[in-house]
Image (cartoon, rainbow, N blue to C red; front, side, top):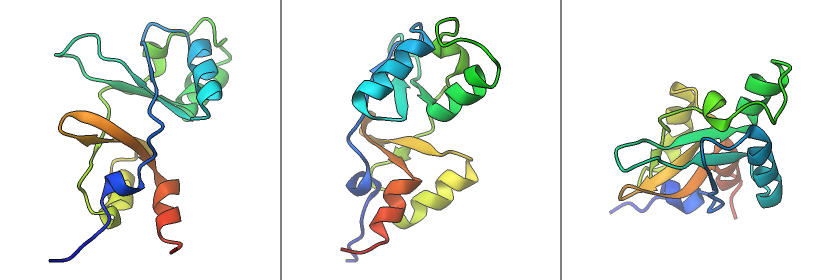
Length: 130
């Protein structure tokens, strides 16, 4: 049986959450504090879906629009529902999947829970060899 790296093997474990009602300023402060460029928006209830907010969303939805970080709520610029990647997906398929769905970053999901976050950087680093 062939052994291969799975998406969860290269995913970062730097998962941080924020409430959708928080201001974008709060999101930026959390990103800075945790040294991340993406936050997952918490579900409101079990029937809800998570959202995601990235630095790209903040630039596009706040900075370019000439709005302030304080006046915009996370829910106004987040993407929802989140496009996630199966934890057991072979790493070689991750970039194509993300590219086909025009996704720059995505959480890695296992058994209904997020276990990490992946972007193209993780994929590139895995191809450098050890």
